[in-house]
Image 1 (cartoon, rainbow, N blue to C red):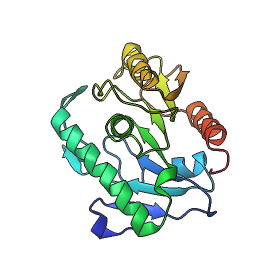
Image 2: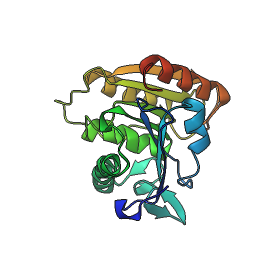
Image 3: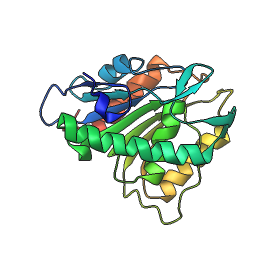
Image 4: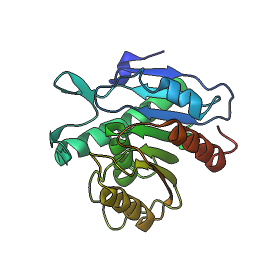
Length: 212
């Protein structure tokens, strides 16, 4: 189902049990609201799935925020789009009736970057996050407190777009803010792997055992 009054084109699939979490599925560049639905169901058979389409187009490809060049983000646009996405999640919770305190993001690449930005700019929006092939989106306020929010970072040792140092920097930013960070490396590049998906599903079940 999709409600046009929420602003972003999206799919919402209700949870299969009343106490389940909601997975906020955030696609990479060129994806859409359908791209991560299968991933969402692999991560959790019970969770609700909220999957928006990025509102920005880059050469016809949807993204969640603008960039100036590969790896160089339009930070002002990122900040505004992050706030908009946080508002969308809260409004969707009211419309669809899911618990806004049980929202876990699962994002790949550009989607992982805006999920990380949600953690850094809108603490409390997400109960946790799965960040697959992310970069450091921006430098947060030093007073940021993520209070043991569980975060999984999945990254490739040979990712041509995201240097290992960038991944490690993001992990350190989140750890310094108090998040409970798990860093999972795979030997590949900038792509999802079956091993990584399984690791994410295992992590989700361990981190939110009563809700997924």
